[in-house]
Length: 275
Image (cartoon, rainbow, N blue to C red; front, side):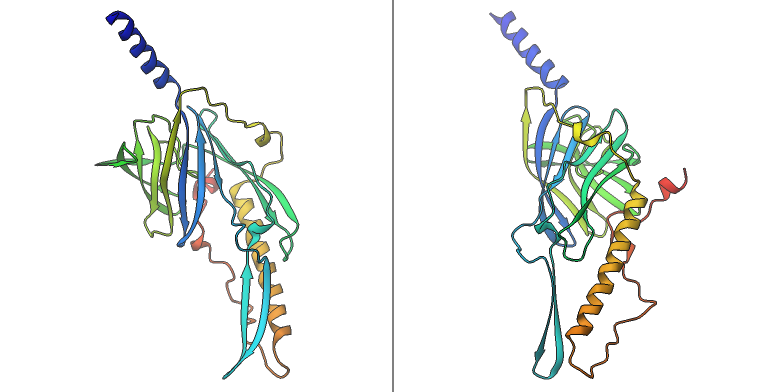
């Protein structure tokens, strides 16, 4: 009987060590705005998704209204999520050293029509410094690490209890699953709220990520900036049309910088440009 029990325990530990599968629910903060995100993973692959905000029913509106002691007050409402189709998410494949992000991008001001983008990147490009600090997250023993990635310094907590080199968004490459991450300016943060491990084999459906035309993260940035600049021009036009006669707009500055790339989660792409 003792031999049989030892055999069962050995088999259980062997299976668990060979098959690391599960799902993590994260709270994702970008400049204080909270969204729910999920990471499903197996030994070498993961899919990261961020839940769209469908609660705010407004899409894009520019409303001008006269107020006492003021010529005009302009209210701007933006919510591209309301019509955005559901994407496959972001695939990270450690074995093949690739990240593929599937996303829909608005191509008009009303955010009704969308273009489909597949952005291909590399995994395992962050050089991590392991630190001696430890703490528990959801009963998992975690170790602290720090690394620089595309203009930001991230402090993360990973757990060797789940020995997969994955994490939220593009953060990966440590000897355990990343459960918490914060950039040095506290502008982008990921916190694991719920962790569910599974014993059965977790087959992630990755078929939708392949056989497409791919663009680079740099090309994606160019597309995004071009769209924001176009949107800014349309907003400026709408604001002018909402103003009373005789009021002159001073918002049209040809040298004004519409997009500050230091506010993006990826500030620079020096690692790509060097190649």
